[in-house]
Every structure is written in structure tokens, then in C-alpha cells.
Amino acid sequence: MATEADVRRIALAMPGVTERLSWGQPAWFARTLMARIWEPGVLTVKTDEREALAGTEPETFFWTPHHERSPQLVLVRLAGISGELLAELLQDSYRLAGGEHSSRMQP
Image (cartoon, rainbow, N blue to C red; front, side, top):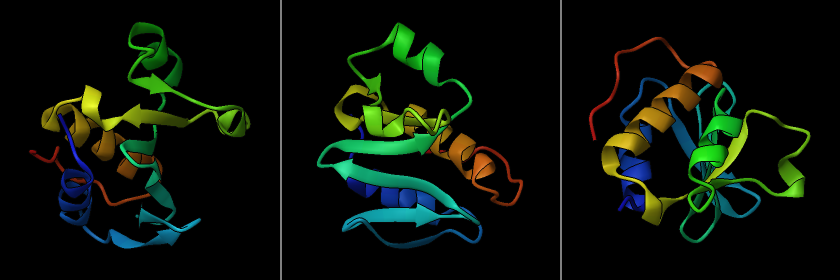
């Protein structure tokens, strides 16, 4: 099970990532938003695989009508993923948010 503390640790280990509030919630930015706490226990990340993730694990990956106009955004229930998967999701989101190219981060 991943936690908000894991998100913070992994995100801030990536080159150039900063943390600040977005809509009153912790958020992490590369060049643009890469991740944000949507609500307690739920993280927003960018991905090119939103449909596939939600199709295979809808209890973990989903989106709301608010996210319909942003097809790269997916919500992730942190309780449903491992630290390793969280690191992969954040690395992909970092790349999509314009972060520097780097090797995969380890949890």
C-alpha cells in the first residue's frame, strides 16, 4: 500500500520537482503539474494509459467528470498500489509533465 509520504519522497527525488499547494492539496510539479492529492488517499497523475489502467483495475484507477477534458489524468487509490507501481506512475507522469529525462526511480 502506497501513502502520501511515499508520493512526496519519490516525487521530490526527481530532478527539478517542487512541491506546493494546488486547490488546497499537496501537488508536485516538474515543468507542469505531475501529481496532486485529489482527496485523502487518492492521487492524480498523468499517463498515456488511463483507459487501460481503469479498464483492468477500476477499483484502483478511475476519473471523475472533472477529468473528462484532460485525457492524460487518472485518479489512483493509493491503498490499491505498491510502492514500485507508484514509482512507475510518478516517473511516467514526470516525463509527461516535462521533467528531465532520468532513469526509473526505485520506491
